[in-house]
Length: 177
Image 1 (cartoon, rainbow, N blue to C red):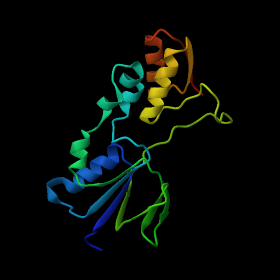
Image 2 (image 1 turned 120 degrees about the vertical axis):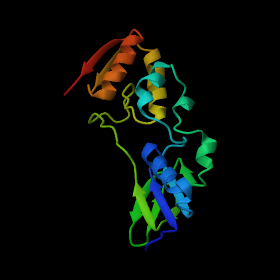
Image 3 (image 1 turned 90 degrees about the vertical axis):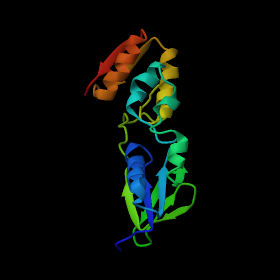
Image 4 (image 1 turned 180 degrees about the horizontal axis):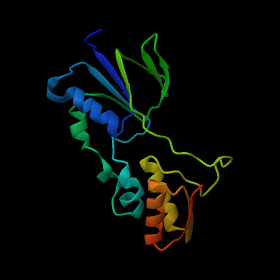
């Protein structure tokens, strides 16, 4: 299969968008490119979520990797707000959370990372992870209403969250396992 006509990209963040742009660049690929993303937002930059967005310095729209009209100009079959739930290699399609299926000749998986969660803490109030933009907005609102915060994980993101909270005047406990 030297020339695929349908490419599906699972993951609509930096990696997925840049692959789509590279495929379309200079008229290289004229077939169907389907970009699938679990979040309802156009592709955005994640690093500002734990800094500028969390601190309230930026609104979510400032994190967009490209303006929506520029993304639309790529002529993608953009599937935002749906999760890829199953992959059928024999049928060469991806099942989506809305019940639809996306057929492909070539598949690119660019899903990124998943934050670790604390065990045995399902649905407890006041416990947050920070991955999508909606997490950053919820955490920002929570930090504005609390004098103290404990941050579990002293890696790059955890340290940034702790620094933003401390700059906002909160008492911060940073915990590293």
